[in-house]
Length: 506
Ligand SMILES: [Zn+2]
Image (cartoon, rainbow, N blue to C red; front, side):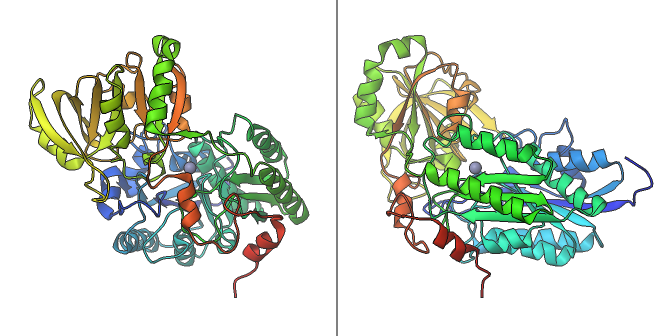
C-alpha cells in the first residue's frame, strides 16, 4: 500500500477459553501454559502462514488472520502481546484470570503508544466470581490502549450491551463447526485499518434473544440453519457492511442474559444495521423449536449399533458421548458408556476415550504388551462412577496438547486413556495411536457436531448417547436467567427482553 500513509503501531493479543459452569475441572494458569501461552516474537512466529498457532488443535487461528491483514497493509508495526488459549473446561480460577489479564495489560502498557488493538476473545469465558469476564478484559485493554480495539468472538459467544458498546468492531465466526478463525481475525484487523486509515465509523446494531437452544443440529451448511447463514452471507457481501454475525451461545454459561444473538456493523448506516440485525434475529427466532437429534441410553445405542450390520460392515457406528462433550468443557472422564460397551457389547469392537491423568502416568511405565489392572474415572469429580478393568498396553504416544496417551486393550474394547483432555473429535485421535477407525464396530467421540464432518468418510451411522454429565442440554435449565427462556419456558415474544437486555446499564 502507499508508503505515504503514516506508520501504525497495532497490538495483537488474546485471552480465550470456552467455559462450562457445570464442569468441575477448574481452569488454571497451568492449563494455558500447557496449551498456548505466548508473547512477543514467539507469538509472531506461530502466526506466520507456515507457523502453527495452536499446535495439536488448530493450524492458523484468529491472530494469524490479523497478522495477514496487518502485513498486507505494508506500513504497520505489529506488537505481539500475550496470547493465552486453552481447551474448553470449567471456569478460570480468579487467580488464573488476574494473572492473564495482568500480563496482557502490562505487555500493552510496556509497548508504549499504540494506534489500535486486535483482541481475540471467546465470548463465553467464565471466571470464578467475575461476571461478564470477556467484557472485563476488553475494558481493561481499551483503557490502557486508549485507542480503537476490534475483537474476534466464537460463534458460541454470549453478547452483552456493554461488550458491544466497548468494542469498536466485534467479528464472530460464521461457520459451525468452526473453520473460519483466520478469516475472522483478518476481518477484525481490516476493520481496525478501515477505522484508522479511512476514518470508517462502524454503526453497530445487535439483538439478544431469550433463546438458549434451537437451530436443530446448528450446523451452518445443514438445515434448518443453512438458509439463515446464506442470508447472513448476503448481508456480509453488501458493500455497506463491515461485519455481521449470528451467535448461538454456549448453553452452559452462567450469564443471566444468555441467548442467541445477531450483530451487524455497517459503514456509518445506523438504520441499515438495525434493520439487518432485526431481520437476522427474526430468522433465529423462527428455528427456536428445532431441537438437536434425539438421545439414546447406552443400552439403546448398543441395540441400534448391533442391528446396523451393513453400517458396521461398510464403516463404523459413531457414538457421541453427549453428556461428556470435552469440546464443550466437560471433564471427559465419564465411564458409563465404557462400562456399557464392555459389559453389554461383547460381540462388538469399540474404541473409547477417557481422561485419567493418574492411570496414564502409571501405564506410561508399563511396557507395551504387558498387562495392567486399573480403575478409571472419578478423578476430577469423585462423585462420578469409576470402572475397574484389566487389559494389555498396546500403544503409547505423547500428544502436544493432550499429554500422555495410552491404549489399554480390554479385548473387544480398546480404551484410549489421556493425561489431559480426552478430546476425541477427529479420527486422528485414534489413528495416530495406530488404531484403525474403519475396522471397529463402534467409535466413541466426545463432541457434538464437528466430528460429523471429520468422520464423514467412515461414519455410516451416528448415535447420540445421553447418560449424565455437564453437557446435558437440559443442564442449562437449572441456571438462573433474567426471565423465561425458550425452550425451557414458553416465550411468546422476544422483543421486550431484547430491549431490556440492550438498555444502557444504570
Ligand atoms: Zn464455538
